Image (cartoon, rainbow, N blue to C red; front, side, top):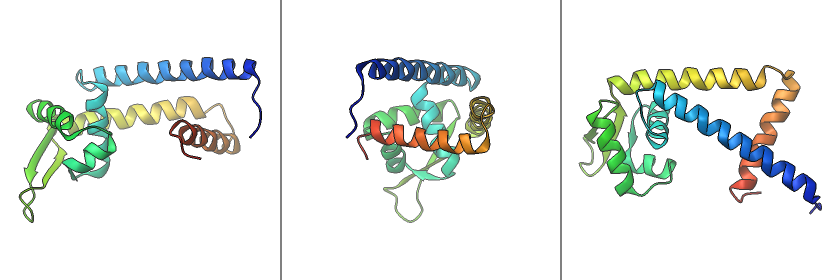
Length: 148
């Protein structure tokens, strides 16, 4: 393992903190644009929208949340017509979740916002630099998740 200078550790932590704040700000703005929903609710809508029809257990695993917490989130989103849920025809114990009317609108807004952010971040780089940057971001994510 390569030794990292303390100065670089501090620079890294400062840069990482700035990235986290910027992402949090973008997420809050997107939540407002999508009708005043929370970050967790955005994650659920994003996952369901990208998967079309999912089981509650799949969502809980994806957002790393206990089923009781997820049930509360989904209940709120169903009440606000962002999601709809129904029992599976094959197994009544399985609950499938899909986007509701407001959820489809929010998912379009969220998708558009993500594309805008990607364009804003990557447009200053050549294609090779974009690929290297994305690779580095994946390495960062893996390192922070404890994977190597």
